[in-house]
Image 1 (tube, rainbow, N blue to C red):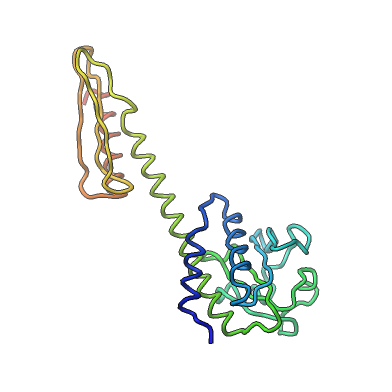
Image 2: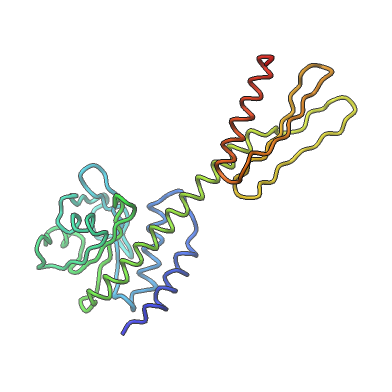
Length: 244
């Protein structure tokens, strides 16, 4: 009987160590390599492929451990195993099953395979070539869990990227440096309590003899506070420029 608890811990550790990349296909290719190398004994994995949807087809973009099919080999989105995958998020098939095209699988060098959909619309597919003695129930249960783990990892990274972008926008609203004004030494800095904050300050030269200093704290924390701060600082600058 498979020790699912330890297996899932092993999966979590594996995914956690994969570095973030702006190239989704490169990230999925690294995940595929890790799974094939580290779980071949547990799940009977002997290889795999990454597909990316373009129009009405899925294009083969990566293979591991070595390429067998032509680059960008097309598999129609209407292919029955793919339709089942899009509907359920996961598919397990073998030659002889209804809807499995022996010509497509021969080109890929596959007799038995499982695949998981990535993202809500399954625009990417991670497919695995399986040993003949692989257990459909064990493989199905485990790869479905892997699918959820991968999607959670990618969603978390996407969310982190959005917060990083919001933080960059917020910090860009702050003065790049304190102004030189008379004999005064002026310094300011803002360190958000979270990834994105709502504190702001500004230096607004009213005249040669007058320097306006604005300090404000938007209520709350995080993204809503940053958006309030953005609106406040832009409105303040526009108001001063128009003598309001």
